[in-house]
Image (tube, rainbow, N blue to C red; front, side, top):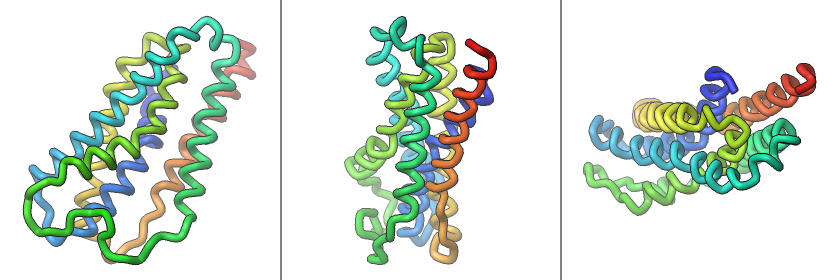
Length: 195
């Protein structure tokens, strides 16, 4: 798997974290740089490590999976993409700040942040199975997914604080479309190359 594909998968996976962080940012009046960075690091660490968990669980099935790895990648990315698109069109609650920390202080509710980071990274664990067939890329994938998520989460908090109340975002749909596109690309590459 080439780096561009890993990068695009990382961007697709980061969309959930981005959307959640925009929501967290919308609840706040001020943007705190260090506070936002620490929250973004938690999202990045969870999102970066979960593919390794999936990879480690799938490694025992590596030889068996090589026969249909392209179909597995297509299936996993398509299912995750469809799930993201579906969730993006569900009606959202209009109640203000249901699950976020609206207090205007710099104290971080680490339990809430960890829970949100874990919830948004479950899809990344399933994606880790894809890298079983590309063992030389897992470290690159972990670092890329973690760093891209950190960047997107930080940007999401900033955008949420600065513009969130004025704009509506449907970034989850974009993330779903990206993941489906990568799944189709992997499948077509394999089928057209006759690998």
